[in-house]
Amino acid sequence: MGNWPQVAIDLPEGYSQCFGCGQDNPIGLKLKFEPDGKGIKAIFTPDERYQGWPGYLHGGIVGCLLDEAMSNAASSQGIRCVTARFETRLKRLIPIGMPLSIASHVTRKTRKVIECVSAVRLQDGTVVAEGTATHFVIDVQRGNRKAESSD
Image 1: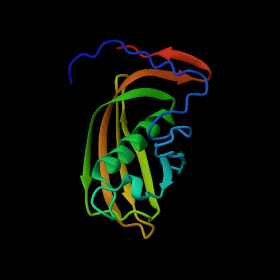
Image 2: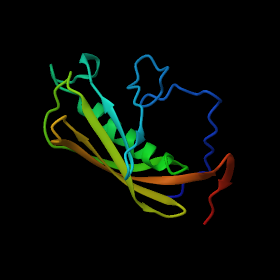
Image 3: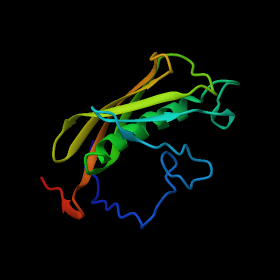
Image 4: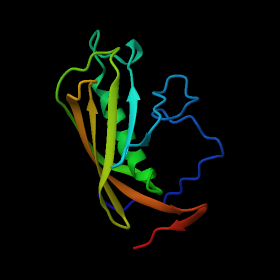
């Protein structure tokens, strides 16, 4: 994956413009993640703003849902990271207007890398998309103190 330059993720107080989870982004998905025992989850009901083919969710938005869930799974463990690689597997067309459950959890954690899996499900539990990701660790949050990760 190569060497990445040192990156700082210093978000301004009250930042809420993230496309995936920012509550103040007018065109964002406004995802709200909460713990689900093994990782995190959110509910999202796509509307026509996010469609590709008429009546169906755009595949790029599905990828964004999965990527956002995996980043938030790492973040929920106090780890700030950036996505290095992610893969999306679309298993079927996803209709707009239907509530979707997005869940993710960490599968592997080292000082430099976090790996996660995620899934999008219909209300009946049918998995319609799956994702895997590798994230580079930027830093680890401990309480209110930042502890820089090291080799």
